[in-house]
Image: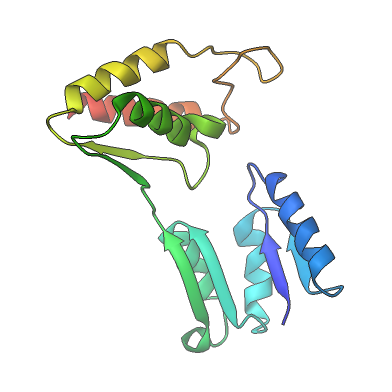
Length: 176
């Protein structure tokens, strides 16, 4: 068996350490990785029919696009985590300082541009207002700047279309 790991377009360098560790622990040629746009790089690999198992984290549309390219999709074993929202549930007895700090870390680490980012917070009604106050205070204390500047917490987004996308999400949330 061999492993082909397709690195994500953003944050892919983080996986190089994982690949390096796997390559040191396993025989040569067992672990391989490819880079590039997923649909362009993985489509041809899927079309070979040599893929027995597809592990995928991302969107359902992208997963479906890969599966249908396999010549025998009904025989393909699939392990996927799709459209994850990574919910933070805050119970009434939670330490709200800890909860706010962890929500902030989970949602804004890497500017929130990772599949495991916290995308939804569900506080108990008894602590919701207090939690929001703590989150607002923590967010207002964040420093915006360039990655190499000291003490910076929020840096530019990695893709040119992201600001417009996020503005749309904010407008939608305000409207609702």
